[in-house]
Length: 332
Image (cartoon, rainbow, N blue to C red; front, side):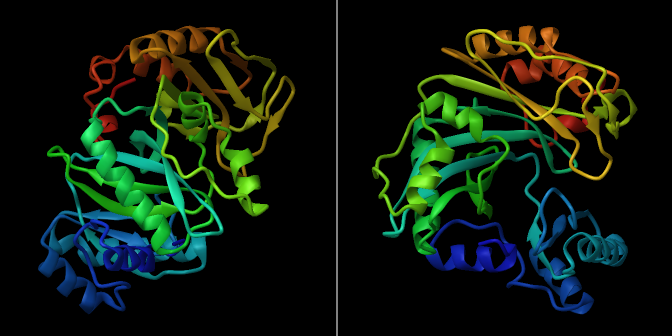
């Protein structure tokens, strides 16, 4: 499931809805061109070993295909040591909704509902929430069933996430599976009162899962705080943190590894903290997040705190009316 092309083929055979695309890996540019014409533009080129948006290119028309094919393969080779590509139909204005699952050694799996990860820039998530404001009980049930089918088809063991693109008509398509705990796992823990890390250890020790699915009882939002300057196109900002003060209080959780006088190196992912708020309603979770962000002090470097402060006041976000294209029109 870590290889995206073979994961998609496995899901097709298991009866999980998948995005129309190439039959596995595209072996050369001639096949790439034929596949694109067969699927119909726009198409998305994707690195089979990809992650974090690397090796992905959106192609709107045939005349751009060759250049984008070459650049995607070059980036994938540099990032993953593998330039194999596959292709999918581009779903316009979708939501990116993922289902958290846990599987045990017996081959059984359960799900812990969804997370909406549609607020992203260059395919990198910026903020997440659960439950999704787009979700309905019927859609949650269908997507949960599909995620369990996906996990049990490969006898998946441990914590993982089945990721879907969902169009405006609430049709969903398998995108990939993250065979690990994800950055945004705390919001699931907060709304279902469940320790995902502890569960992984129990599964590894051979203890069976309960078998029940979990539905969100509260609302949680996570903002990723990155060492980046949102006023300069999110340019990375490594350096020395001269002052660090984290917010606190009921319903506020901070996951971080940094502190005053911590030196942020330029070699790694720029995320330095996560702010998670949990409340009875979405409106309360947003209100708590506003306060937490206002109280969060990180000096010496630029961070994405100002972006998140603006996001929490954004009309479309507050109304839950956003897609993966949200950042295209967002102005700092």
